[in-house]
Amino acid sequence: NAGVTQTPKFQVLKTGQSMTLQCAQDMNHNSMYWYRQDPGMGLRLIYYSASEGTTDKGEVPNGYNVSRLNKREFSLRLESAAPSQTSVYFCASSVEYRGWDTQYFGPGTRLTVL
Amino acid sequence: KQEVTQIPAALSVPEGENLVLNCSFTDSAIYNLQWFRQDPGKGLTSLLLIQSSQREQTSGRLNASLDKSSGRSTLYIAASQPGDSATYLCAPGNAGNMLTFGGGTRLMVKP
Image (cartoon, rainbow over all chains, first blue to last red):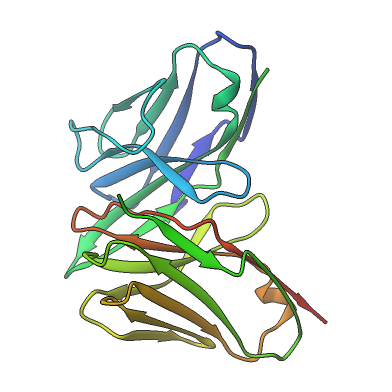
């Protein structure tokens, strides 16, 4: 049981390049999330998916797109990377059980845009 | 819009001290509140989750309290150890389980 996995761990892009961050969970969770964390700040929600086939914008969605490929996988795409997207990106998943809904986080992807 | 503030931003204590980390939030209409731990270069690990109807939760040396009406939560760490050194993040959640994170308290426990 690997929990939430993310690839790649590190990535350097040039301005204007595109890339996709991959996330997968093996806990059969319904909900999945993408966050970004900037130095000295808490995490901010980019997009989330409450179930397979649905996605919704979070607090900072501009410049990103997502795909909920199936129940396990939720990818984040940067179509034209900008230096302002330099950040650490975290994927998380959760399932509600009797009113308890704890999010489980992946190890993160450190992205630098030059 | 929910805003979350954590005080202090950084804390350094000698081993064995009891300590309190503070979290305040502006919108009291929360569904629950979670405390997370983040080690350098790592993801987040959930420590405690308090439902909005609860006043506190305990796990080992950790105790989290919630005063929803005043928009405050505290994380109490008893008998701190060097292994407790990490950043602690507070995150109130709404009914859709959308979490809003504070900036965190960076804790250093010195041997």
